[in-house]
Image 1 (cartoon, rainbow, N blue to C red):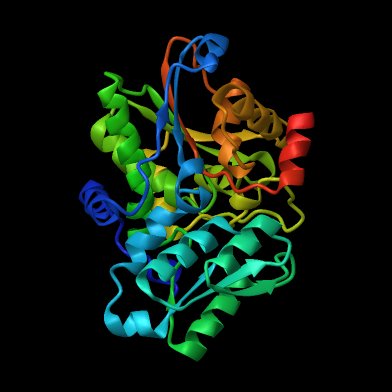
Image 2: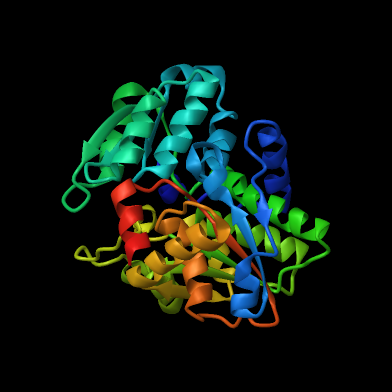
Length: 331
C-alpha cells in the first residue's frame, strides 16, 4: 500500500532506539570524523558523520532493513517493490538479499550507472522508467498489485524514518564520547526521511540544537512546502547533479515531522556541491556523491554561521559515477 495516502502516525525517539536494536551488528557504525583541516578553515568545530561508508555506500540501508526485517513470513514470500533513483534501491536490494526476500526496484533509466549496476548485482529485478514522463509510484503500485508484494517507500513510512534516524543516534552518541554536543546539525534533504529521523533524535537528545535540512536550489520543494504550509512539487523542468535528492514533493509523514522540528531549509547550487565533493576528497579523504555533499556545501558556502560553533554534518552517500566525480575534482 502507499504510505503517503495512509498518513501513518509518526515515529518517536523510542522507535529509533528500537530500530537501532534491530540494526545492531547488521548496519555499520560509521565513523564520526573530528579534528579535520576544515576546523581551521571555517573557524569552528565540525563533525562529519560518514554514511558514505555505510553498507552499499549510503544511509538508506538502515531504513530498508528496519522495514523488511519486520515483515511476516507470508509478506516475505510475496516479495517487496521499491522505487528509487539508486540509494534506496541498493538499500532495499541488500536488505532483501540478506533476509531472503524477492525484490523489484523501479529506477529511472538515467540513474547513475553505478547505482543501476550495484542494484542488479545485489539480486534485485530492476524495472526502468523515464523520470520526466512516467510516474514511478504508479508503476510500483501496479507491480505490487500484480504480485501481492509489499511496497517499501523511500521515506514516507514510520519504519523507514526510524531506521534512518539511527544514523543521527549514532552521531549524537559519538559526539558525546568526544565530550561534545552539536549546536547545529546539517542534513541532506529530499523526501525527508533522513531529515525527519535526524530531527527526532537531535531534538530528543539536544533540544537546544538547531537542525537544518539542505536541498539543491533547483529541488527546494521542502523549503517551499514549509513556507507555504502545504506540500509543493518541484517544477518538471528542474535539473541538478544531485540525483539522490530529486524526490517530489516531501512525504506527508516526513513533512509533518520536519515542520515541527527544523530550524529551516538551506539551499546550495550545483557548483557549490561540486566544490564540497572536492573538499571532502582533499580534506576528509572521502568520496561523497553530489546529494551526499549538500550539507557540507551549505557549511562551506556560509549558509549558516559555523565559526565558534560545533556543527555536525551528515555525509549521506558516496555512490557517484567516476566521470561525475572526476568533473567535480577538476573544477
